[in-house]
Length: 300
Image 1 (cartoon, rainbow, N blue to C red):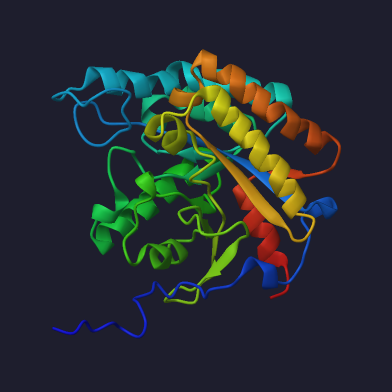
Image 2 (tube, one colour; image 1 turned 90 degrees about the horizontal axis):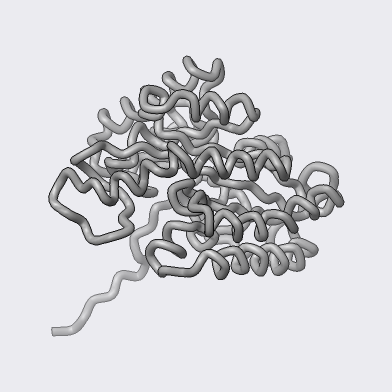
């Protein structure tokens, strides 16, 4: 039997292919060429049910080992990370499960008092957003939007799906429920304007799957000192590349991982040169929302 190949493979049609070497030039605020942000994931997991990263093999529920390891981030790790960010004067984009407003409101209050951007990250990371019906997904986006607005006085501009899980209509629903950008896509080093069925604007702001402690430290079992060196090496190279065009460098962190004391030491070593470059005016250390707002103001 002769194979039949389609002329064109199925596509999402959210944006066109665009080589990074052939784009219009622009700058970030104060003439910076590289924008850097921290994606600080604050997550809550159902006890005895659902998904979650694991430090050891899954046990029959209730899986006390893996649940307790993740909860360390909310009780200890996040506070140690916030102290480090305070010492270096670094803002974060805080990716928030709204279940934390009931579980540990003190933590979210501390993040808000720092002036960090609050970004929607689902209600709990024990569930995948892509498993919902369209009506259920819309309700999730609206529920998280309204809870954050009630707690902070301002609705979130951005969204990161739990487990980066999307349905075919997630970008459409995000735009229709008032979100201005998504962090779900890791396809580029610059923001991308996405198409939506309502033509409402939605930006994709680069979110890292390499400079991210879960895939690197948990999945690939990278040592903390190597992860820190990876951040520094990526930063050095992106500074060189950004001479030609503006770029975005995100760093994704989870406090139950990098908030462990022996890893926090190496995270400090990685962030200190970035803070120094910020102080010298060489980079724009910012938040994802500020990045999306900046490109939205630029001429097409």
